[in-house]
Image 1: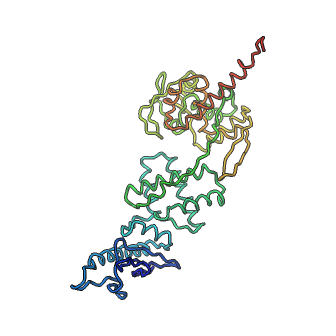
Image 2: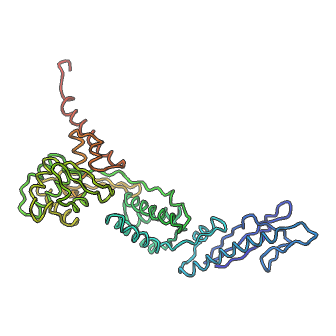
Length: 415
C-alpha cells in the first residue's frame, strides 16, 4: 500500500486555492481522498515534501502549520492502518480501505473480525442456552465457508451492502438454502455486530440496514383426535412408550423440551409445576397441570425415571416419528418454502414432520381451539412475540370451518 499527498490542480477556487488530497494505491486499485478542510495555492505547495510551505511575512497567513498538522495526522492514521494490515495478514481491497476512510482521519482499526467472533461465542456460553450457542457456531462456520469459497474477506469494515448481496446470492444460488436460513444468518450476524460495536471493536453500522425476509412457515401440530390416539395407543416397546409419554406431557403442558429435560420432582406440586424457564430466564414460572399431565406424572412417580423418562433430543425426534407412524398419523401435509423468489412445495406424511418442537405448538393451538383465553395460553407458554398470532389464526379458521359444517348447512323452510 503506497500513500502520497498532492494538490488537486483541477479544482482551484476563485482565490487560487485547491484542495489537498491523498492517493492510496495497492493491488491494482487507487483511492483518492481529500484531507478535510485543507487547501493551498500552487506556489506554497512543496511537491518534494508533500506539505505546505509557510507564507512569507509580507504575505497573508496561509495556515501552513495547522494544515500540515492535519496532513501529518492523516498520514499517521494511514501508517497505523498499514501496520494493521501487515500484522493481521490482510490483503487490502478497495472496499476495505474505503470503509476505513469513511470517517476521514478518524480511522478505527478495531479488533480482528474472526477473533472477535470467537470471543463473542465464548463470553455468551455462560448466559445463553446450548441451542443459541450452536446457532452462533453454525453462523460462524457458514460465514467461514462463504469467505473461503467467494474470496470475499470478512472484516468489520467489509460488512457492507455489497457483502449482504453477495451473501444472499451465495446462500440461495450456491448453497440452495431457503429464505428462512438467510434470515437466521442475518439475525445472528446482527447480534454479533451489535455486541462488537458496544465494545468499540468497530464503528461500522451498515449492518443495521440488512433486511432478510423470513417466510411464514406452517404450524405443524397434532389435532386433539391425533393427540388422544397417540396418548391411548399401546406400544410394544418401552422406548416408544417412554417417548410418547414425554411428548404427550409436553402437549398437555406447553413446556419446551429443554425445560422438560431439567424438570425435577421438586418442581412438581399437586396442581402445577414451578420452574425456571431456561430459554427466557423467567424464574418460578407456574404451569398448571390437567388430568392428562397428572396421570403421566403418576405413572413415573417413585420409579427410576421420575418425573419423566427423558432421552437425547436426536433420539427423541427419531422415536416420536416412529410412534406417530405406528398410530397412523399420516395425513398428507404440503410444506411451502422459498429460495429467493423461487417457490418449492414438498408433501410429507404428517408423522415425518413431528418433532419435540411440535408438542408446544400442539398445546397452544388446541388450547385456543377449545376456548381457553388467549392471554392465559400466552402466560402458560411464555410466548411474547408475534409468532403466537399463528396459533390464534389457526384456532379462528377452525371455528369458522366448524360453523360452516354445522349451522351454515341448516336449510330453512324458506330456503
